[in-house]
Length: 202
Length: 202
DNA sequence: GAGCTTGTTGACCGTCCGGTCATTAACTAT
DNA sequence: ATAGTTAATGACCGGACGGTCAACAAGCTC
Image (cartoon, rainbow over all chains, first blue to last red; front, side, top):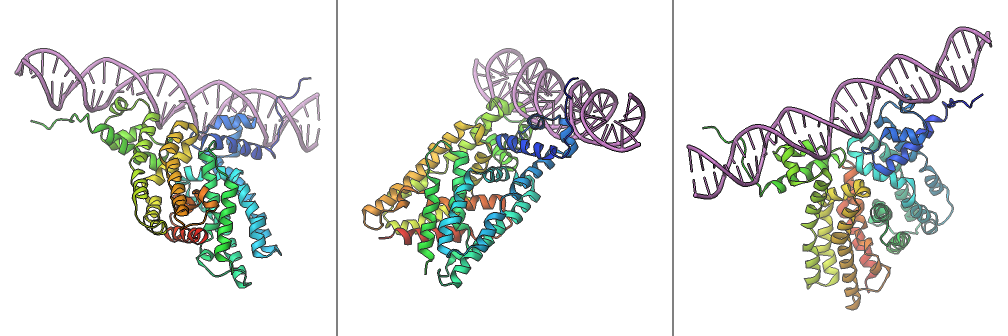
């Protein structure tokens, strides 16, 4: 009466493998990540991994998409439905959202995309369509709304929502490269918001 | 009377190999770059490459350092020696410098560092010491000078020179990932400078 | 032009790794 | 219990790739 050597868990395997893969890709990057290592961390054999994912590249794409998909909607919804004034929303929920990104899995995805995007153009398109373009459009719309309400002036910022996010981008890269060096990334983003508001407030 | 099969060119080989390596690393990233490919593009045999560089990793480091070393000093010098007013210098030479970076080899180096920095901490330190910390310190000093001269107020920006550069950072990443998508990166940087000046001018 | 030095070649090696598949054994239906 | 189904294993393969080295030949010296 020994314990079974393994259990069949068809339902959970893809997620477990994908989670393990995220870890390994995050640590090593795509090319240096070993499929054996992923299988090991997921607690399965390499053969099984290849039952659920056709190739290493498919696995990679699945991992990226999985992380991306779970993260965008909350903010966009909040942004559409808030009854705060534009300024209050920017200073509150939007800033909070930005502060939390550089330490989140999104930062890892960005790193992987920067490193490997070249050879996975469909992945870059996916990320563009599901995250970047939606996020930027939402910020633009939001500023426009502020203009319509008479809270903001109509400046170049309306058409350059990237300005709001650029310190967040820099903070992400900073943490990726210079984890040990000092930088108050929160303060960086706060100050940018402060400047933008000062610049566009009516 | 046949032409010799090769010429001895001890002096030029390291540079030629290093240039070829830059191309290949830029196209493929570190792990996916093939030493054979580098040798082929440099017009030498793999054996010769290994005479000048001990390992692939040493080659990589040499390439990064070579690109970095040739690029920093001009701006820092101009910044120290200019007799323009602070505002004029920012709107002129500094902005020009920033605009030109995202399309330069520096952007490639950044991409490689983001992708591979993890496993080459000494390379990250090198980049930090020779480029980032010097550049940021120079900008900080410059703003302080403006404050001393009464041109600027003393704001949080003095201690956050990253704010000046963050749209440049975003522009670099944007071009790396989304070459095809529209973004007026020049306008992005101009607007940031505009906002900062409006924010800190006395 | 003979002989020496050394820059250069390219075939070769050992290892590693993505991907395969015959075999096994956990579950299921009866 | 038994037989059938299929989730899961892990040994294995072929090719690729970083790195080596014995042989070669370009250029120098006399």
